[in-house]
Structures are given as C-alpha cells and as structure tokens.
Image (cartoon, rainbow, N blue to C red; front, side, top):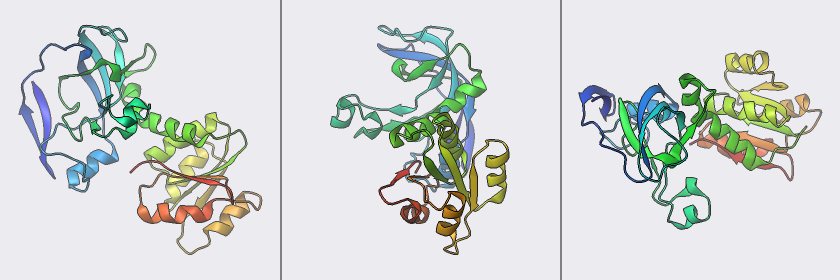
Length: 262
C-alpha cells in the first residue's frame, strides 16, 4: 500500500507499507480521499513541533470513505463519507470519564503521535468517524479545523451582540470567526497582516479590524472601534506565547480570555 512517510524533519519519502487488516470490534477500515495540510504538519516537517513522533505517516484533516466495519459498529456503514476526529483518547482515565476527552492522559493524535491519513487505507475506532450525506470530501477534510473554532466559541459561551476580539486571522482564527457570526457577536479582528484583515472585512463581513503595530496603541484603537469599550471576550488564535500574554490587556474588566490552538 502506498503512503507518504515523514522519516525525520525535512525528509518525506514515498513508501510501500503493509496494508491494514480487517477492522476489529468497534473499528472501521476507511479509504482516504482528501488530506488537509495544517500548521501542525508544517511545524512537524520543519522539526519545530515537539509532539511529533518520527517516522510517521502524517495527515489528520481527512475526508474518508468507510470500506468495512467491525463487530458492534452502528454509527457508520460501508460507503459512508466521513470526517475524522483525529484525537485518540483512552476512554478510561479521569478526564475521559468526566467527558473531557481532549484532555486524555494518554491522548494520541493520528498523523502526529501515530500514523495518520497520508496513505490509501487505514483502520481507526469507528466512534471517531462522523458521516455526512451532504458534504464533499474537500469539505469533510475541513470539519476538524472548523470544529476547533466551534468548540472555542462554545466554551466562550458567546452571547448575541457581545463584543469579541479575535487575535490572529490564520486558519483557526477564521474558523472562530465563522462561529462567532453564527452567535451574532460584534466581531473585531486584530492581526499584523493587513491582507488578512482585508479578507476578514470584505469576505467574512467582520465588524471591525485593527492592525497590530506593536507600539502600545492597540488598546486605544480597540476602544475607538468599539464605542469606547474593550471587548468582553478576547480569543487568541495565534499560538504565540507573547501574544497570549498580551491578550489580557485587551479584555474589559470582568471579561474573559480564551486561548485556542497551540
């Protein structure tokens, strides 16, 4: 079976690997149709992602088709088109038992800690598959990314009309914006890249944009575009420890700061 293997930082190889066997109890065999490339993959390729295990078959943003299911699987069936939840949790630790599966003590991410989807077929727990009759394979590969934005806005408990600042207009920031629009928030986006801000304004229809200049003028400019007030929710989607530390100064008193991404 053909696969792409990241043997070590900056070294991809095409390889023939052993084809997966039949799915076991609770498992599904899937055929990979689409693989998204995200910042985690780029960082892993460059050797800048400490969580990456080498060698590894990358790929965690996936659009797949179910080929075969194992005993006890009821949520999907052969032929289903699915997105993949790539976070493999143990279901047994304290976090898992309390529903916080993203905080599993032994969490493994396919394509990062263990082999992922840059191959023809693979087996995974069927509970990690989410079927759709409407979405294309391209769209299914984006569900994981969009899910991060959805989870962020859900955790923030954003209310209609609430002033929210999104710091960082990269892919995760854009996903957050989409769900803030669903929540009908008043959205301000801050980024140092003016092209990104123009996209957010013209294509996504955000209410306000602020260029980050690093000259300590950001607080006043945030107040200017928000009627003299600071946002009650600040969402930092940069993954930068400097930006994350600075985020507190942009929140109104009694406000909240939410970190999303690594």
